Length: 123
Image 1 (cartoon, rainbow, N blue to C red):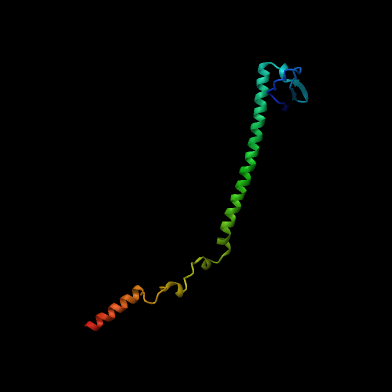
Image 2 (tube, helix red, strand yellow):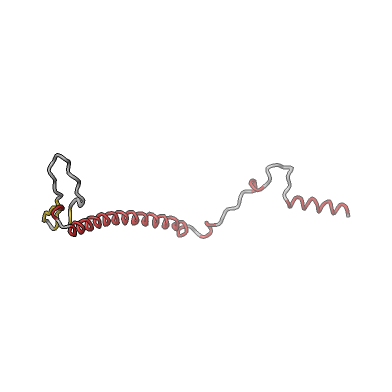
């Protein structure tokens, strides 16, 4: 495991150069003392460590989201498994709600009945 800050920060102009410690398997190295190829490998390992952390974080989010959606699915299916079949029927509206609000308006059946009565009187 590597523990470091792979890209060293530039030293201040007045202070002596400070080396960046890199711990590899409990052995301390200095980033600036490594060859360019070794520095490149340290940077790759550090970048992959960051990507692993991000992937684990994203995995946690996806797992929690999946669990939440599964809970919603189970809750949505719950009424279908616990209610009797006739409870799913839509109740009919009361008669008071189906009649016109004004007594001067006629339903189609009333209009037909009135027409038939007039036709009978003419014959």
